[in-house]
Length: 197
Image (cartoon, rainbow, N blue to C red; front, side):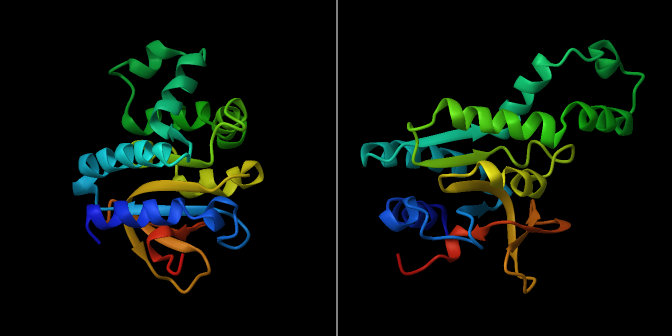
């Protein structure tokens, strides 16, 4: 599916009242993944911005959360030892461990996303999550989705730079960047495989 086809498909699905009311589910959760080829990221992100404007003109409000920007916000609030983090003396493995420690999924990341949802309560119909490739490897998209489910009241679409692969699971499986098999199923359905709406 090309970018234009994906745009038209997303517009059609998202604007459907059954989708917006949560009648289209993946195992009782309205979480969907819109996968795309990493080589088309800039074009895909432009398409996403156009989609948000188009949906807005149709009366459908989108709350868009960039996970990378969210992580930067969390890090800016943290009072960690930034001289050590930025030091050329530390290696990649140490930095990765430090970031994992600061960016706890349950105590930092999920509350930050939930806070954005609460701040916009009543002002959005669908949540877009993007920036998944930029937060790898210190955060994993599937871990975020597995912990976010208790806060979800509106449909969630995750824009994912990767390739959908079938593993015979009720959940979708994706290879990040089309190369990295994380060995995890996502608690989500591939939105591009939805038909009949």
